[in-house]
Image 1: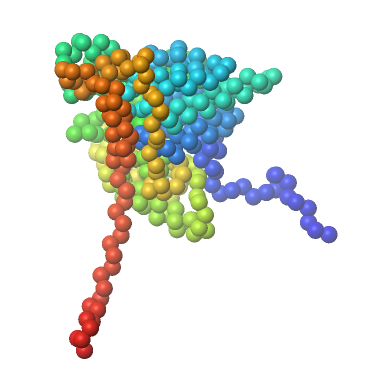
Image 2: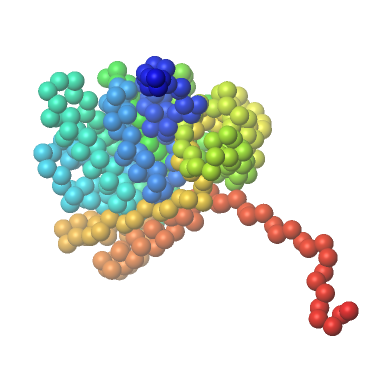
Length: 383
């Protein structure tokens, strides 16, 4: 008589959680989870769009990100809650970010995935689990470009004219303030998807000899264990550490199996957490000291080797007759000249930005050198 199939309780638990399961579980244990990434990685945006059901199952009500501007929150809410998907309204949300280069289709696909999730939830008779998208973006240009008198907002650090100050610091305070008002005071949970530099928690990074401030720093000092940082593999700019992580994974039982590996895990008790950081500069207690991966981030999401990254694609027809004038004025505030830019020139700016995406990512590890031959090859007739 053949043995009975094992029940769900009797089946062995996999050693590693999938990235989706891990992120959902972590969000269920902490109120704010900061997910750090580089800009424009196609696979990572696809992963984010595919995690929504797992996040909702773990009580996450909000997905916050910096890739649409906060002043457009009402339009973002209307887009996500609309009975029909409006791709034009979605694209218009990214025109504000023309100068920074976030007009990419995969970001729009994340919003579309949220809309689909919420549409499905509306059809449920009970236990609705919609997700709201919260915009954390701060404009990278002044509201009135004429105030610059032909100067460059980018070069003069005037990207936030009304508040002043260093843009990275001001954007950190802005994001922390929005999350406080929209999530923490409501007693809700959020996954916060941002550029990796904005997600540091206990780690204070140093740039040009000075400490920096991030949204994660501010939240962690207030919330402590209520806030956690997770990064995608390869997002932290430390080539040697990236190479070492991939080496350890290739030597693991899963890696030796020759199959594609995807996982998420906490680093506190993980071998990967002991990987030394050689390029990240910062401190945990005010002193500049050597760091290990577990001190840089609490969690890690591995979707594949760093070499597999692909850049996002441009949203088609982002610039229209209706939004061209405002988009041109805002871009000219960043890169001023006497004559207005043409529509073709703005489209070329977008194409150039997309082509340069991968150049802004942390570099790939150098391939190993070919071993030198120990003996020279005899030439014909040398004998």
